[in-house]
Length: 475
Ligand code: NAD
Image (cartoon, rainbow, N blue to C red):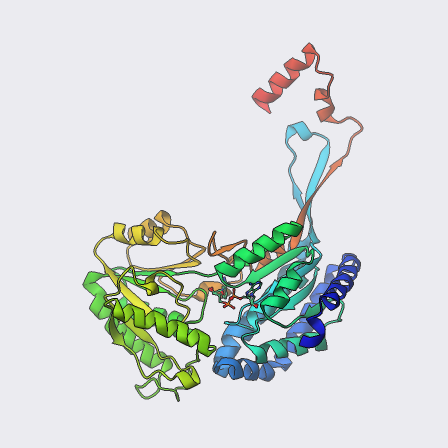
C-alpha cells in the first residue's frame, strides 16, 4: 500500500476518481447514506476483535479500553447520524423580513466534495472513523491519512476501508509527514485535521493555498481546578480516570491540577488511592496490571521522562510513582507537587502520565494562571459552589467545559466538540460534524412578478430618498 500510494501521481489520480464519485453521489437519496452507515455499523462490530488486537499491539491498550474509547465512540456517531440524518439534511425554511416581501428562502445542505482526514496516533481508530462518519453523513468522498506512529492500527484501517468501501469513495493513504505534505498540495474541498497545534498551523497554511476550509482539532494544556468545597474523593477518582486513561495520551486529559491549599493533601491522598484502585491490581500498579496502557513509542517516552526530570530538577516533589521501564515504554502514573510554574512541565502539553499539582490561595490566582496560557481544549472545575464554578468558567475561555466531571464530554452526541484558537478551529461530532462537512447553501426564490426591492432600484432621483429614509428608519 505504502509504496504505491507514495507516488504523487498515484495520489493525484485517486483524488480525481474521488472527485468524480463526489459529483455523482450528490444525486443519491439520503436513504442511501443511512443504509451505508447501517452496514458500516455491522461491519465494524464484526471486526471488533481485529480492532482490539491492532490497537493493543500498538500500545498495549487493554481490549475493553479499545471497545470503550475507540469502537464505541464511532458506533455512537453512526447511530446518532442514522437517527438524525433526515432532520439534518432537510431544507430549513427561514422567515423573510418585510423588505423581502414575496420571496421564500431556505438553507440546503450540500456535500462539500472530496475531503481529507488526517489523524493522530493517540486514539488511532476512532479519530479516523469518527470524522469519516460525519463526512459520509454529509455525502462526501474522502482520503484518510492515519498516523504512521501506530502502524498496526493504520494497516488495519487501510484493510477495513478497502474491504468495505468502493475504491472511488473512501481511500486510505498511509505514510508520515512527506505523504501528508503531498496530499496537502491537492485542492480538497475540506480538510479535517486532528493533531498538535504546531502541525495544525502547517495544515492551515497549506489549505490557504487552495482556499480549502479546515476543521482543526488540536491540543494544549487543559487545566483542572479543585476548590475547597469539592467532593474530594469523587473529584480525585474522576481526575485519575481522565488523566491516566490511555497512559495520559488524551487530548482532553487534565494537564495540571490547581487545588485549593486547604484541601491539597487530602486531594493527593485520594488521587493516589483512586489511581491504584482504577489501574492497579492487588494494591500495586506494575507492568502486569492489565488495565494500564503504554507510551506509544520511545520518542514520546523520553519526551515525558525529560519533562519529569526537569520538573524534579526545578524543585518538584514526587508524591506517587512506580518503576519506569524504557524497554517496554511502561511509564507509571506520576503525581508531582510543589511544581514551579516556570518548569517545562507547566509550559508544554504533557501528553503522558505525569500530573503536576499546583496549590492556590484565591480564585484570582486561578483565573490569572489559566488566562496566562493559550486557550485550552478543556477546562474542568470541581466545586460545590455555583458562584465559584461560574466565576472561573466566565472569566476564562476553553473549547469545552466540564463541571464536577472529566473527559466524558467527548462522547456526548448532542454537544459540539472542539477547541478555540490554539486548541482548535471548528467543531466536530454529531450535527456539528455534519455541518463542518456540508456547504450550508442559502436558496432564495422570488415568488411574485413584482420585487419589493425594485422600489429602491436606481436611478436615485429625489423622490426615492423618502422611500430610503423610511427603510432606514423602520425596516
Ligand atoms: P501530530 O500533529 O504530530 O500528527 C498528526 C498527524 O499529522 C499525523 O497523521 C502526522 O503524520 C501528520 N503530520 C505530522 N507532521 C506533519 C507535517 N509537518 N505536515 C503534515 N502532516 C504532518 O500529532 P500527534 O503527535 O499524532 O498527536 C498528538 C497531538 O494531537 C496532541 O497535541 C493532542 O492534544 C492532539 N489531539 C487532539 C485531539 C482533538 O480532538 N482535539 C485528539 C487527539 C489528539
